[in-house]
Image 1: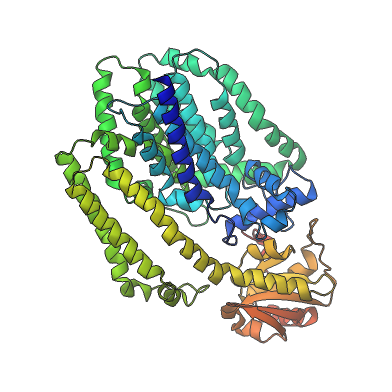
Image 2: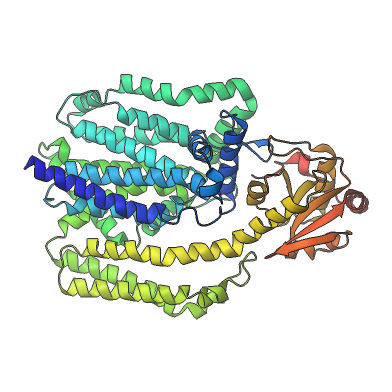
Length: 601
């Protein structure tokens, strides 16, 4: 029996692993970095690798204190591997792999936890697969796990830590396992104090629901564990404070933690119930089963509270505490972003598997939920069948021909076909009263998301990022005397990443022109990759077609050196720029770059 369970455990993990590779790893490095944030992470990580300074992230000649260093360190290790420029020519595999790997590990941990601790009513090894796929197939997880940012890595390290805490409490042995505290340290090194807050809220609320909370608290050994977490996570913060002092404190703790939580940053103000919407979106197309799983878990908790129950049967209760902790904490936050919901998605996936377990026998609830879910799938197919209505409303200045390309590349047709087959399959399985209908649809979605997402990613890359890569190559081939490089109008940090040069970003307004002239004389910056010659007679300017039509830019004498997509490359004499700047100043315009952050990135 033990051998049979061991084989099933390995088989389950193998199925989850292959599924995760398909979702997270397949074609990971075949497209360029997506502006705006990923190139900042990638540029900082590559700078660490090439400069040897692994303490302070730096982008475009400016310190970047936005996030702690773990994500940069992992990317840097990959950039440091031999022949990286050959097997990762775009630099995106190295930048994205830490996010993808974090999600893959968490996916495996979800499956293994549900296999080793099957919950009440679950006697099949399919439930771990359902829970793992419920996590991995979340639209938000699919997007962020393939992005070169820290959100997916936080979700992975934090989720593994929380699951390990529960496994320690549910375990019958008394060994002093510290791995949960190790991963908590990693989570704090990924995103900061928010990881500790979420873990504390989850465990505190869970222990509050348990009669034997003292013994459970002793099991996770908080005294020793906190010491280990501090030992892993705190030294970098101390070293950075010693090295950079007040700028680091004000930027990281003041702006990116305290100010983001207590006030609205970058216009990301949303209503209090915002994350209820995001919760529904993040679980599509199986959102009805999340709410049913929550309801069932809460109902079972009320029953169990009336009598003693085994701690090993409390995973769904723990998941509710986990989900609610994230929901409450970020709902109170003044600044709200969809990515803030990512740490709750593992808990949501486990609760979806709770619905899967309780709906194995067809009943009224089974029928109502599946009818509702079929309507969702049917509605999705209708959206693409009537795509002519909303395609005409697409207005992306960076991809002016996006609507026509969606049609000519066959993406709209593929979406119609996929969602139609999805709805038909759901109706067929529902009519057969299949008890594993959710799993079968997840498998179909697993295959289909690759069928749909791959061409979408390639289209977006060709339309938005390829022009920037091409113009970066042009810059490297024609640059004279370490000319200064500027980007006007639409501002893309990927230009800095691909050109490896210091880039001055400015708006296409009159003030932006004056700012650029003033900054070329006063804003000195350099890094190990590029030391511009600020005294050179000319500069290179990347300007989008919309900005180039502005009178104050088009009137400046310039030499057009080439163009890709909506971007043109100009060479401008500094004397001409300075003269026109003086004319604008005489007309009443003023420089304002010293009164703001020079660049938002």
